[in-house]
Length: 448
Image (cartoon, rainbow, N blue to C red; front, side, top):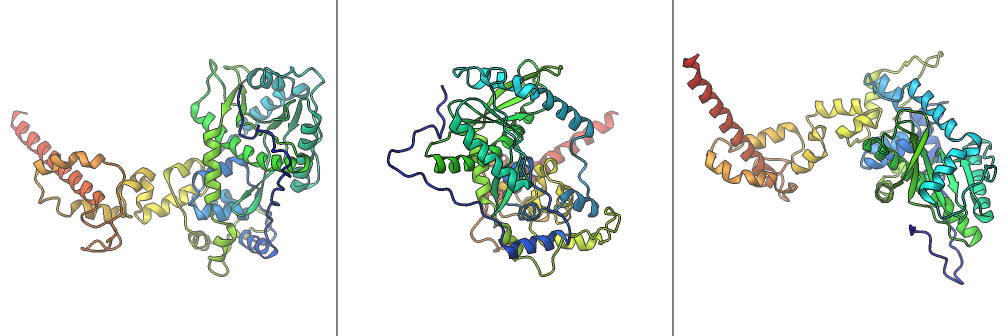
């Protein structure tokens, strides 16, 4: 039996703690974010996939601001001349919607059967017609979120099986609320809540693509974090602790058919990582306050609603006013990644080579600095010295020297820093290998 983090009974005599209200943007901040989007431009809502990508790179202030302001990054990237050539095809979306409709048919009979088999076999099996499916329709995302919270509270108090189809949840992200819509949430007879993720990629012989499962787990972790807030509100109102399960049900097509199968996925690692990374995000208000006056990402669309009238240079200046933290992983998760990659390459930033390389190079920030450090003193070292020190090239992460800026290395690691020493040894080994290759070709030339 699984023991969940929130499954312990509340202490007797202790009043339930009322959770803090979800922060709302102030009037001044809402006005500033509206100016960043442009007059009359509706904010683009955040989904769990975008939040998971944002949590994976919390140091990127550019994405934090653009997502917090609701800017359409795909349209912005296209206007900058660096569109992102990725995203789901219409065929994949149609197939996914068709499969989800089949899984939820007959009040989710197949879904509830799979959940009972995989996650709660000890409970009474859900009977046909015995699963409550409350109506969650309401006006606007705020109304739907309030209706979802009420439905979860009523289902937890009543007991029995309850299926919430596309509930609306809220989560604080960088100081502003985000509205999220999971595929489904199930309330168990014991009052526990489980997130259900329905995906169209197949499970072949009981196993799915690990990369796709990992992405689904990170996305589900965002939903669980949002559910934990609702659980705290229900506990404060009823005095009953609500366990939000840290295992989610992943439903996929079985083999190459359209029949559903499912597996329980443990997301404790993804949950802890996402929670920690979201806390590290700088608030949108703080980032917006540091922008130059008049900064806006407005595309100034023409009357047809599609033609961009603002120049790419103006947009690039506005985008570059916010610091980015580019990494190659961004190419699969952010619409502006190709623009940021181009800027990183133009500046010769080592970040374009990956986070691992960036960490190993310590205080060396550009490719030019790396080449300079590798060439300094490399010719004076003998091959035996290089071989003797080659093992040190693999030692741990390089550390930035506290005296950076001395001895002709302004703003970089010092000549005695581990990264610089490793680069010198690598340059010496490369020079030695090239010299040996030239000698071998010269010796073989007369024989041809």
